[in-house]
Structures are given as C-alpha cells and as structure tokens.
Length: 462
Image (cartoon, rainbow, N blue to C red; front, side):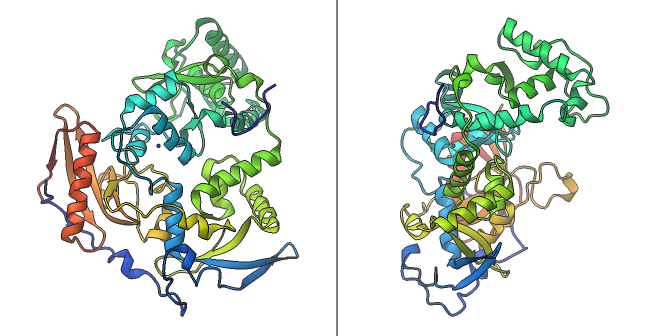
C-alpha cells in the first residue's frame, strides 16, 4: 500500500471610458486606526497589530486575546496566497506552470470563452508568456495534475491525489441510493446504468458521453443539466473516483478508468480524518492568510464548517493559530477570524506588489469571494454573465484590473477570434482616472491582447 502524504507522487490609448459613479477611490474610504500610531513599515512594524486585548470564551474555555491585523496586512497576505506578488516575467515552462498551480492549490475550470477560459486566464495573469499548450501537456502527457472537484470543477496537483481519496470515499458512501440528484438524471434503474457505463469504459477504453448510447434527456431538467443517463453515470464515476478525465476534445471531457489515468490511485490509503482535516485547514489558511472557519471550509469544500471551527480551536490551544480581528476598508464592524501565530513574518516575507497592472479573470482565486473582496479592497464586483442585459450595470464579461494592491478599473472585453481583435466594450474607473492609471490599464490591455492571440485592439465608441 502507498501511505497518504502530500509528498507522494502522487495557475492604444483608451478613448472610451465611463467614470464609475458609485463610489470614490477606495483608498479614501479607509477608516482611521482609532488612535493607534501608523506603522513605520510593513506588517512587522505594525504597532497596532496584536495590540488589541480582546478575549472571549468558547465552550467555557477562555480564548486568548484577539490580535488586530491591519487591513493592508490582511490584503497583502491574501495577495501572496493568490500568487499575485510573484514576478510574471520570464519564460513559462510546464514546470513553472505546475508550480503556480501547486502554489494556488487548484485552478478553477470554466467553459465561458468570451475572451479566454478561466483556467488559462488565471495562469496567464501570473505568467506573461503562458501558453495553453503547457497546461495540456501537464494534464494529458506529463499527468502532473488532474481534473476534479473543489468548490467547482478544477485542476488539482497530482501530488494531492492522496487527499482526494477521502473525497472519493465520501461520494461513494453517499452513493446512488441517497443521491437524489443522480437518480433524477439516471432514472429508477441508476445502478444498472452506472454498471453499463463502467463496463463500456473497461471494454472500450476512453469515452465521451456522446460515444455512449444516447438515452432520453432527463424530463423536466434545464438545458444546463439536461444530461443523458449515460452522461450522468460518467459524472458519478468521475466524482466517486472510479473514472477520471484523461483528456478533452474541443473542451468535451473524455473519461477513462481511473487506474489507467493515474495508476497509483488504487494503492493509495485513505488518510485518517484528523490528518485530512489538518491538511485541508492548513492548505486553506496558507492561501487565505486570515480566514473564518466558514472560509476555510469553503476554500475546497473538503470539510464542513463545524470541522474547520474545531480545527481552529485546537490550533489556538496549540499556539499555532491566533484569533484575529480585521477592519474592513469601508465602515463596518471588525471581522473575527483566525491567522497563523507568525502572521507578521509571513506578511513581511513576500516582495512588494508589482507596480504594473493585470487583468484578472472573474473566476480568479482573488475575485471568487465577493464579500471578502469588498471588505479588504473596497472593490464591489458582480459577475453579470447570467444577468439579463437590461439589468447589467457594467457588462457581460467584465475583467477587474489590479495594480499593486488596489483595483483601479474594470474592463468589458470580447475577443473576435476570426479577426484576432480584442474588443474593449467599456472601461469603468475606480476613483480618479489619472494619467498614470490610464497608462497602467493601456499597458495591461495590450499585454492581455497579446496573451490571448489578438493582434489588434478596438474600442467601442464612447
């Protein structure tokens, strides 16, 4: 048997723009430090941080004093965990792309391709010379990563496979008998459908859903979930770890038996629950910097919030984690959370945020939690692709623009692949559209256009 462990083999001039009317420059909305002296440097010199003597009880046990973490430090920890303080220049290689994926923990996959699909966009925003072929090699040739589920469909490092054994086991334990969602899509004879699809994979090798006998689509289901019973069976086998995605053809999944894709999988032992819980919480806190138990749970959806709360309490008693208070950028109550006891050193370790701007995907790890984004950056973002056009405030696929540790604009973009032209449908500024900000956005748009294969950019009339 192979023991579970992370080390087992197992990311132009803009003529037309509209001034954002809703709020002033977020930097101007930052609240004063309530009498605390301004820190001289970064996190390590923050006299305010840790000065709060706020304690409480939980379960009859006195909690240690909560350490007050300045907003800019919490923001910096999150940026570091999201890989946005690392240099983007230099030659992108398969190994460098894999390091980004491992640093992020996973990369979300999404089908929308108005400009570039989310997984490619997330990686190219961290590597200037990234090419989609590098990710294809990692997934389909080198097998250094695999596709599976976190909070959504994602690309996961292969060395984390041992931790996914626990997820597979949970799905199998839930099974078809208790899985109403699956039965609704496979019909009353779901076990027989699954067995027929399992046999087809075993006998015929890699298959798309379309390669199987086309059964009737689920009655009453939407087009989005209007799967055939065979497609639903393939997804069930994928979720439970019996099948994996071996490749994609025109973005359609091609499934095969898991042991043919990652041969070591059958021999991997399921890690003890306590070990899995510790890994899941540490993995999330490493990347979030400061987080509530709910945020630790939501990071990969590998554990329940109650489990994350239990881990936090245990880690506080052990002295590795401390209760924390973080003040939002705008007016509002301080937020109770948890951070590593050495959060000052962690905040001081990364380099300064790059001065250049970059356009982020709506599915970027930094953007994913909209409430956290607004608390720490003063940036209110709404993904409007599924909002009816007359009700949209900005546009269908609007990309946030990050410069340093602030959002300075948002850009509605669409790629015309036939003409190789990146169309800029609108720009909205966060606060003042200064000459420097215009330059930063112009450069970011030009760089992004090159990355997605455009040779020209075009702006919609103002």
